Image (cartoon, rainbow, N blue to C red):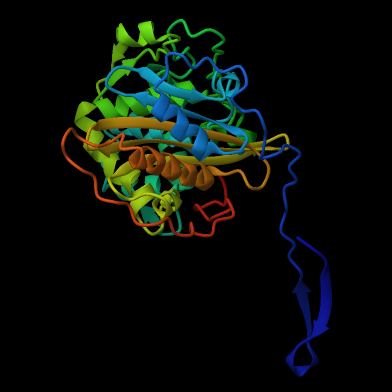
Length: 367
C-alpha cells in the first residue's frame, strides 16, 4: 500500500486518501533466444512435425514437444537441451493431476459446486478453463499432502518420463509438504510451488489423458531405422478412463470458452477441437509459460507441449497461441489430411486476444 494523505471531505471533515501502488515483478531472463535447435538429434523425428514446431516457436526462448499419445513416440522435440532439463515449477498445469486425483477420490464431479468462501462457488469445468486457484487449493487441502503426492507420483511426477533418452534429467516431487507459512499443500496444488516438472513429464500425463489412461514411457527415435521399428513401452495403466469425461469440458473450455486461459490458440487455429491447460508463474527473475494439450484431428490425436521461459512476454496464453500456430502449420502441410479426403482451407489468422499474463484467476496468480 502506498502513502496515506489527508484531505477535507464534505462538512470540512478530515478524510484519509489511500494511494495504492501495484507490485511490479522484475524479470532478468530473456524471452527470446537464437540457435534453439543447436545440438538437437533429429534423424528419427517426423520432418513435417519438426518443421511446424520450429516455425511456431520462432525465436521464443522455449521448447516444443509433439507426441503420438497412442504409442508414446516423440514425433519432434525442438530445443532438446531445454526439453530434457530438470524442468521448472509447473504453475497451473499441476491442476490437471490435482483434478484427476479429486475425481478418483470421488470428491467432485465436473458440475459439483465447491464453496470458495464469501458465497463464491465454482465447479471443475469452470475452474479448469479459467484456472481458478482457490478451487484447487480447497481440493488440495481436503485431500491432504499424502494423497495429493500419491496421485502425482502415480501420474509420473518424480520419475523419468522417457525410456533411455540420452540427457534426460529428473523433475522432482518433494517428499514433504510446503510449509504452511508458504501456503502448504494448497499452494502446491494451485501453483505447483516446490515441484519441478519437465516438459516430458507433462507430455506423458497429457498423453495418458488423451489415450484413455495408458502412461507410456516416452521414446525419442534417433534414426529412421529406430522410428520404423518403434516398439511402444507401457509404464503403467492408470485407472482414469471412467473419470476422463469429467475432465474434458474444462480442458476444452480453456481453449473454446470466452474466459478460457488458452483462448489465444483460436486466433491461429480452430479447425478441430483442442483440449489443454495453461500455466504461468515465476521464480528468481524468470517467468515460465506452459501449455500442454491434445488435438482431436481427422487422423487421430496428437499431444503438444510448449514450455517457455523468460520475462514479461512469457506466459501460458503465449504458449497456447504458439500451439495454435503449430497446429495451423501442420494443417497447411496437409499432415491431418485423411487419404483421399481434401481439407478445407483455413481462414486467415486473426489478432490474438490481448493478454498480459496477469489475468484474474481468483487470487491473482498462476494460470
